[in-house]
Length: 65
Ligand SMILES: O=C(O)/C=C/C=C(\O)C(=O)O
Image (tube, rainbow, N blue to C red; front, side, top):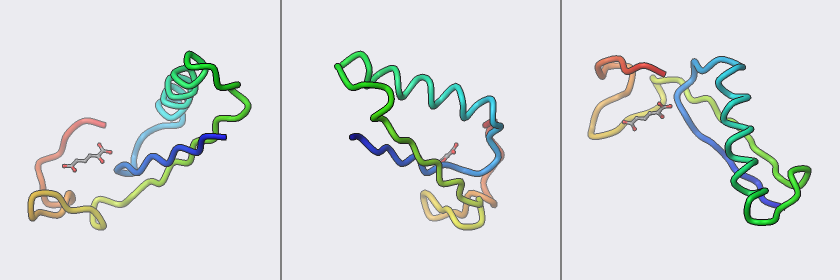
């Protein structure tokens, strides 16, 4: 019963999340896991709560989601 947690910047659309769900689930199906057993949790993190390379994401140049 795999549980996959995806922590990412907030802002992705439902359509984008559905695409991710399909892709991630399919990878597990390819290795023999029934799709119903795959659980995916999205944790959308505000850019003010995320930092990389010593900088808050909210203060870094915007990149497309
Ligand atoms: O850590 C970074 O520099 C960038 C992270 C980007 C995401 O988490 C995202 O695109 O959701």
